[in-house]
Length: 130
Image (tube, rainbow, N blue to C red):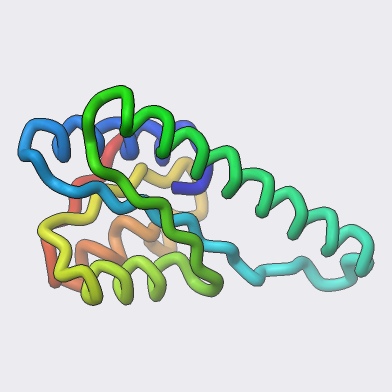
């Protein structure tokens, strides 16, 4: 989850699936290190603070909404590459499925999106939610 519309829809889809299958839901937020060249230290600090704020809001939403619908959910934060951290966590948990939101970035049509890379990893079923 990253707070985008597609990731929130993916989270809702995954929560519904977990509820129907009486399964545990694990939501992952990855703090990325990508910082634009030439950015000031103050701006980098503000970006980091914003990311922590987003993670906190997502954690609260997962905790609140999962208890309302009767799903056991866990929110995990990691640092690094979203692809690497999703693969690592899914393998650690021996996940039955990975649910991600579709990318809305135009450039991903040429270089591939996170979802495409996860599907190519071929370790678990991947559902891409628009």
